[in-house]
Amino acid sequence: MRLRNCTLLLSVMLLILSCSDDDSPTDNTTPLEVNLAAMIGVTGEFAESGRGVVAALALATEDINRDLGTQITIQAIANHDTQGQPDSVEPILTRLQQEGVSVVIGTMSSAELTAGKPFADANNMTLISPSSNAPSLSVGGDNIFRLIPDISFQSEATTAMMADDNLQAVITINREDVWGNGFAALIHEKFEAAGGQRVADFSYAAGTQDFASLTAALTASVKNAVDQFGADNVGVFLAAFNEAESLLTLAAQSSVLSSVRWYSTASLAQNPTIVTNQQVADFAAQVGLVSPSFGLDDNARNVWLPVQQRLETELGFTPDVFAMVAYDIVWIIANAFIAAGSDDAQAFRAALPDAAAAYTGITGNTRLNEAGDRSTGNFNFWAVREAGGNFEWQRAGSYNSDTKVLTRE
Image 1 (cartoon, rainbow, N blue to C red):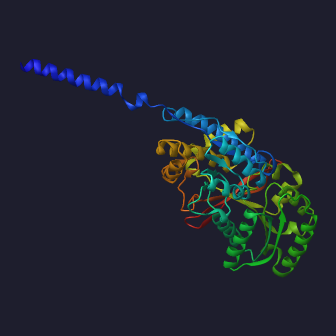
Image 2 (image 1 turned 90 degrees about the vertical axis):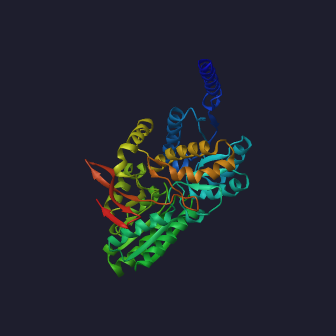
């Protein structure tokens, strides 16, 4: 009798286990399918940087589908070229919304992102930028997320370099948009707070190609500053995109502008147009032009270098750091959708901050602040230097935003 009871109990247990295996969620659950889109300028002002970002999105999609394919499948990310034009953004978003796309990677510039923000907020769409950093977009509770810190970090790094150079006077030049105006304002604020003097500031309309009159006015202003402070104590700060090549070509013809130090932004750091134009490269090396960009951790080189090398093979050039940030963005999106458990736009957006905080990718930890921007950032300084008869971008230093320490190389 006891044996029969044991046999019956064993049969029941096997039946339960068998049913449990057949009804396993793992067996019956299909991967979540996600349709994303990108709005990255691959022609126009951000062409080189944009090409790197688009290549990185494709690479990340491939890696995610390989490694997380049992949980999520990301469709090939179609890019919609904004050509760097803010006016193109809302029409693109309108089409994407009609197609049912709720998460869009982009844009590159803050001016473009500013143009798209009202539509995204009003239509339950999420925009995630790999490169926008204007402080005016640091707004909590909206549908905009940015995976680099706002420019308060970068301007702090730049003014630390200026202080280390014993700069006493600065003249700023910026493109007339939300990014350029914000950058110049922060340089003024931080430089003056450190005891420096703002001598003059110039701005120009986006799309400008003829810089003759601006260069003439700049030359007169720099000459006055040099007469007052000495050439070693005067600097020019430039916030520009690819149009910088035209401006610097004219500046290179001025002995006055060639006598002082020049500083720029991440938009020029490692920009190939600066080193392939012989006249501009020679000028940049002569004036010690330095540009800070969001820095990758040297101690994690074994993590990010393989991705960079794969992108170099695809592109034929070394992409800037925004491509690496874009690679991480796709992973964060995938993790947020997995955490949300569906492709619901609001559930995704609610899960995004925790997914970013929990993720450490090729660009380091991606924790966001209350405004939806990356919460920390260290910077590498890049300078144009001659090497073997050619000019190239070389790392000239770094700035740790946590310790406030500037290190030169």
